[in-house]
Length: 436
Ligand SMILES: Cc1cc2nc3c(=O)[nH]c(=O)nc-3n(C[C@H](O)[C@H](O)[C@H](O)COP(=O)(O)OP(=O)(O)OC[C@H]3O[C@@H](n4cnc5c(N)ncnc54)[C@H](O)[C@@H]3O)c2cc1C
Image (cartoon, rainbow, N blue to C red):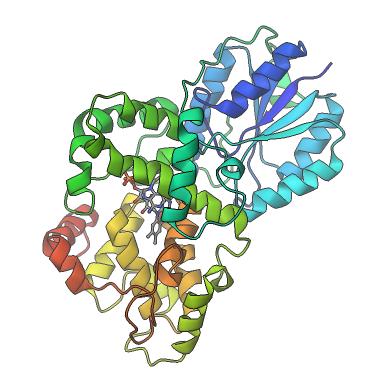
């Protein structure tokens, strides 16, 4: 009798993980051991050393925690749709449980795995508070269309999360199918990057969340749009890698004793906007293409496709922060150095890529490539949706028409200057990076 296998991918934590809880419940009912598997594809979609380091450090904490409670863990550098069906067969697994991810590559893996399995395969959405397919059965138009659906269901899903318990049928063998248990090996491409802006791991994630909720949440509503203030939570890398549960964070916010007007702006981002991004990527196959934009946006961009651009840059010039605008270059350097760009500046940054690229399709591919390469929270539905919002008006409305942008909302440095002290930000980035 083999184990229940839980394929961990997007939710890289032991506590507050509904997929792990479900897999453990299955294992207990059927008197099985429980094995957690992480499959790291050999060519891990362009992941950088900062991202890799962040992920590996977090997974090492996961492995240690699982060991303490008798749950097996193996880390393999294999494609999931090749490794997992073989493993399930070889060890006579009872069933396979996996995380939910709306991105294309995961859907393809799932389809391929299902075709090869003869045991039950269950997908559990532990990343959203309400499972994406329950919130809505279709692509939502904007925040105002998904918000009432979320609000209606939130009471039912924003519940206490039970603690994971020591497994009554423990894994004890230090090897499983030739794989060393409870380790994450150093592998080619893994080295400590020069700059480590965030300390990784589920414990660190919870500590950062606690600090934000207790000391900075109260100013979120007023400070979050000013890149010179430490106004945002800074929790997106933890949320992206699943080291922090959004449900846990929302509960911490709601039980901290702050009035509703303090918590509401943050919960709007954490729940409504985040779950809207998953909805977009789940129901829109072309979430990273111009074809994924609304008809009005595609039409207006087509009408301005051949407008004369005053400046046009290559991907290499954008990447090196070599445009004519000092604010944009500072954003790019900040992103490369810190692994994160302030949310307000992300919008300006992407919109300028639209303005200074030969066409919207190229702009979209540049923005996604740079965001995925340098953001610690990149390769995320929030990223694809954020870029699509900036360049393709996704979840936005039509604005006054102008060159290149058509009716897509425009942003520029003058607008930033009205919002915050641009020169202070440029100075801060120069000090941080040592580049003037
Ligand atoms: C061009 C562009 C690219 C982006 N790329 C990413 C990305 O790669 N990864 C990513 O997680 N977010 C991305 N975002 C969304 C947003 O900017 C970030 O989630 C936010 O800045 C992260 O910082 P924080 O955790 O301090 O946010 P906070 O303001 O503290 O918000 C808390 C959490 O709410 C969620 N959230 C906040 N704003 C948004 C939003 N607009 N849409 C969806 N969810 C949101 C995030 O999970 C965030 O961690 C992008 C936005 C744009 C415009």
